[in-house]
Length: 243
Image 1 (tube, helix red, strand yellow):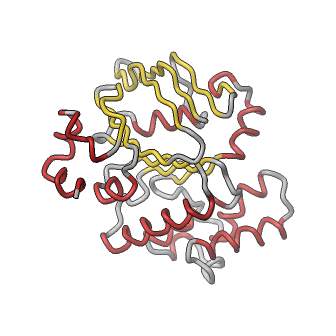
Image 2 (cartoon, rainbow, N blue to C red):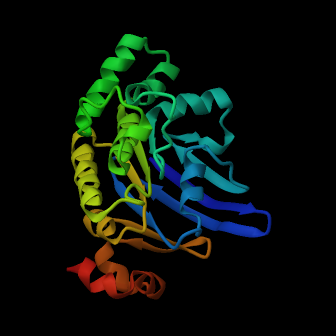
């Protein structure tokens, strides 16, 4: 379980999170949505330990993340898979080396790490691309490679940061389908940061809407009309999503 209690985070005078509390159960899929710059990524980075909150508590698997030592945090992160918004692949590494990197850092032999990385690449539809470099890939392929790297450790938690950002509608649809397939195969707890309305429609069993540093809505997408601010955010797409 992920549990966040009264989380607060500021950058200078910019109060990004003003008291966020939530719980995410094992195996659940949750979307975190809101306007650009509202704190979605900051919230998730606090959960995975990439940022320390100013106040509040973050718990994952009964461990308080914001109080863990560097060694303890690295041990916990082995259960995390993180898909960065712009893939964050290393240009000087091949696709195979990029995907195998988390395993190599965990102490796996090169042979075993590469075998598992090849399987992860096959799972995301990139079999045969392992020898290429990131600059040789399309935007959609780079996104798939980033997803392969996130799942190569067989994580219990997968975090997607704007997984369809910058992609055309057809490529985005392929990413939607891939995410659905992976969720059914891995049964991982999944947290998705997005403002992609089609992604919200597909995965909207539970949507958390952030606004002005707090959670303004937490529920099913079909109940979005109960929150004026969330309804305004969705705008003219609300009827489409409910349908």
